Length: 188
Image (cartoon, rainbow, N blue to C red; front, top):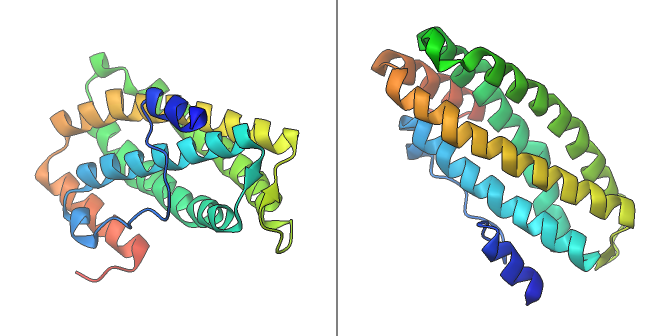
């Protein structure tokens, strides 16, 4: 219970089961979709911290994290790197100071994907054992990943999405929606 309380105090919501997928209709509002996706990410990061602190992970939780890290994270990064970041950078003004922020966030996406691969290998490499014992190095990887991603999402929410909401035009948002739908195989 102390782990759950600490997760709640950190501002993240720990999950107790599979997160509901985001509705495809939300893609019509891509910035809202990304905000909702960020909340889902925070929930998964809270779960990672809980697993790291307990030293154990149920097979169900491992499969949920693996799916999140192999499907949702790469899609989310493509949404940002291929659509959101270039669009908001094109519309930004010099005083927004976005270029170095976006460069940093994109480089962190690459780091995140490398670390995600290591986490997936660690969680998936223990056969059918349930629960999975989490080695100290894996616990540290989970904690580091969650901590860095928490800061990363704060920058995206507090800077990038705020500026995007102010600067992006309807045509930009429609193009982003189209790309995000195509990336997910969602028909118009």
